[in-house]
Amino acid sequence: MTSRTDETLHQSDANGLDRRSFLKAGLGGTLLLGTVSMTVGLTGCATQPAGMVGDTSSPASNYQFRFLTADDIALFESLVPAIAGPGLPEQPEARRAAIAGTIERIDSGIHKFGPANQKELRRLFDLLNFGLTRVTIARVWSSWPNVTTDEAHAFLERWRTSSIGLFNNGYIALTKISNVAFYGYEENWHLSGYPGPPQYAVDALPQFKQTRSA
View 1 (cartoon, one colour):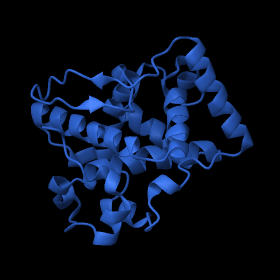
View 2 (cartoon, helix red, strand yellow):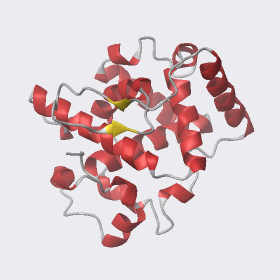
View 3 (cartoon, rainbow, N blue to C red):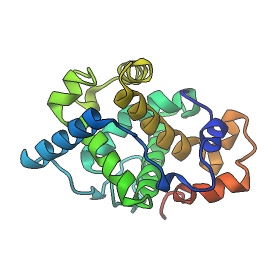
View 4 (cartoon, rainbow, N blue to C red):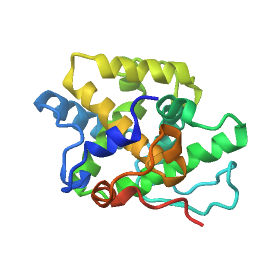
């Protein structure tokens, strides 16, 4: 588990995450992210929200993605197990449902962020999904659906300990939104020995209060 829910929530003050910068990238990082996003668009890679996605782990789910693309979903299907770690159920069906629900809450949360943070996160996700930068910058050789949990964890650890600020901030963004979506979900509070966030923290993160859509 990369960090605990209460630690993640306490990093957010009453102004809310949607008023902050997730990446705080320097000029070089901003140019890199912008170039990658432009290249992704020119090469015809999927940049539209995934919309309604068939979810084999929960056939009754009718959640409609409004920010995450199909590639983003595959990215988080690899990253969430590395971030949530032993918090996920071991039983395969329950595990798939927990991962799917977390990704839905990530999408729902980002959809309610301000345009500036949405733009930053779109650029970050494009960087990780674009094959050339996934290999050269993230050093992840396989496409995300083929990445093992150990490989995903190694990627996160490289970015966490990197001397490059863009990578450090990318790590923080990925783990923060994933941890809040997973451990901030009321049914998972007990996994970190946490009785629940203080009300001011809940109020500061209304984006993640929704559960899976019926």
